Amino acid sequence: MSGLAIAPGRVNLIGEHTDYNGLPVLPMALDRDIRIEYSVTDRPVVRLDSPRARFDPFAFQLKRSIEAARQGDWSNYVRAAARGLLEHGVPLERGIEGTVAGNVPIASGLSSSSALVVASALALLNANGVEVGGDPGPAPAIARLELAALLARAERFVGLEGGGMDQAACLHGVAGHALRIDFEPLRVTPVAVPQRWRWVVASSLARAEKSRGARAAYNERAQQCREALAVVGGAEGEVVGFRDLVADADADGLLERARRALPRVLFRRFRHVVTEGRRVALAEVAMRDGDTRGFGDLMVRSHESLRDDYEVSTPELDEIVAVALQAGAAGARLTGAGFGGCAVALCEAGQVAPVMEALSARFYEPRLGASPSGDMMFAAQPSGGARVQIADG
Ligand code: NG1
Image (cartoon, rainbow, N blue to C red; front, side, top):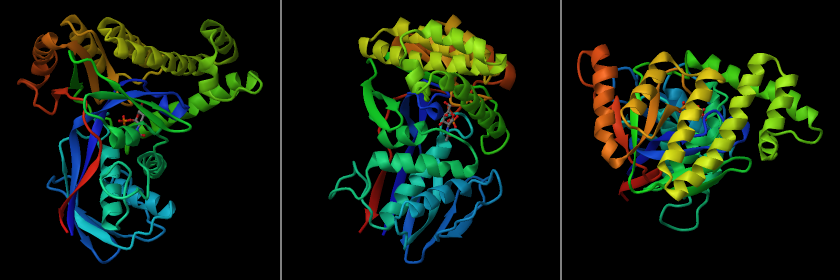
């Protein structure tokens, strides 16, 4: 038997560095994906290659203690998926052999890593006859939400203390919709994107390799959030989570208490998380109301907070945001973890061409001496979620 596992990347529209703090996010699945074309083998072995030279072929045994390859090795994302399924109690007696391809830009904050994790999991589940909820066929043996949650835990195998946004967005994408994702417990609510809204994704031309350099900076932020929460949440008696703190109607009072209780840097991290959590709720309302200006303003405030309080932007990302806004975008912000990667801009349909032209002329051409490629800048469509296509019986 052979099959094709397809898993989209995602672009996060708002709600950055909130997922691992238990606060909601609003991404959408991309019309770009990672694909594993595989044949099923009777031996419990995974053997994959890639047409890209930087990705060496690899093989590993499907056994309970799958070891990590060296840091930064792409096989770790496939190993993470296999480990997660085995630890969840899914027997993986059959393996896969095949090729990984895709058009999600890598290390760009567009979740190519989670798309690879999800595609690997779907291929292994299919190879072992395990139905996934949402696919045609009999009652699922594993629900999509359950799979998203277990793969989020599994991907931490690569050493990033990430949240659960990416795997959930990849598995639950709906064409034409953004996805409000809540955590603890994981829930996904599709929100229709107004017909005239367009999303321009633009790369800062700097990779944000979270299996390498950006990992320490990301994990440091997660640790700072835990420290800040322990002080502010602890002082509230029974209140322990960011979600309880954000639910408090007195936003100014909370920030004032936090300002008094926390050292300067921790206060700024804390302020980003709680204000970003509130922005996601407001952005969902703006999207449902078709309020382009309202959504755009929230994106701009999100970017400023990520730049000034969370300190994950770069001069290039700031420049892309500024150029997009000057050219008529309703809003723009960095997307994904930051430290490089991409920005996303919201435009009404008629503004896409002027925004792209301005980015090309003022950001890319001076740096590249040429127009950007279609991987560096593109208009993204909200798309469907991960799936398997069976080639023959
Ligand atoms: P990107 O930048 O796409 O790898 C990472 C995390 C998300 C989330 C964002 C910041 C993983 C796999 N991804 O996304 O969970 O925390 O940063 O909002 O950990």
